[in-house]
Image (cartoon, rainbow, N blue to C red):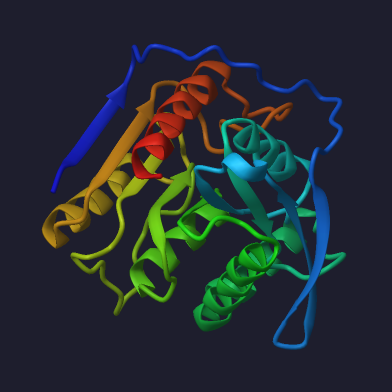
Length: 252
């Protein structure tokens, strides 16, 4: 199996059209239930010519227009997309302490984290999303994607991806050799998730025999892909998005 550690400095760019601040969703919000709890995801379809599907896991402020924009961008590339909700309908924390509390609840109960993610995946397929799926996430969502990768609990998963996400493996967990391929996009100037964390993950995946690719983008801080934020790094965002789309085309 191939294993690639890629430091990105000069990838050719696709013709990209990144959204401005104004945004009108092309898809629809979806109310659904997991274990008698209410959630609200977002679904957008590539219609009859879908190449596959993508499940997006949100960052620590919950599902909002950032994930909706990314979902619409992926639908334009030919994928059915479901942005899952792991915090519960109406729970979109704004204060840092509330964001930390929402994510810590799931970090401390990984069985719940996995159940809610798989519940979102089931809902995506109920909405008609193509069965063959890539699970990807941003920041907290990237850590969730890797949690599902290690668990092996999801069916018909073509690949996993993390954008500026947490990369450490909890005690007692490992990656199996049959884990679907993994794509990591990481900012070289990220002070929340270190380059040592990236190297450690690469060593784990290499040892397990998992196919992986890592893009490291110089000067990019944590959360570098979030439009309109202080952390936004245009070059890293464009290059990582180009690399991710190439990855999707290969996986799906």
